[in-house]
Image 1 (cartoon, rainbow, N blue to C red):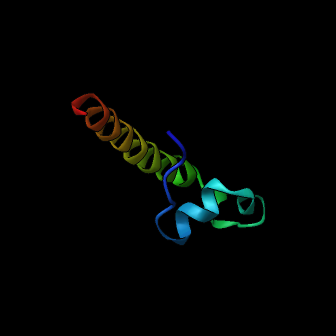
Image 2: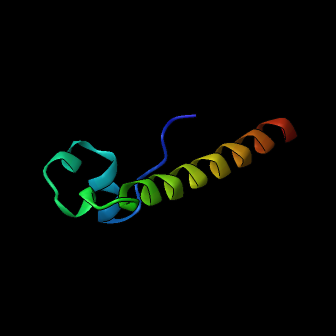
Length: 56
């Protein structure tokens, strides 16, 4: 499955090349929390897609 859309500016900042220029992401745990939320949504979308394909 391809990537899912990013939700909000924070995720866009943390998961693209902009993270190098933004200071608020330097704080411990900020980037990791955003990446964790994104990956959780991605896994959920993959599961739903897999279920949909197996039903067909």
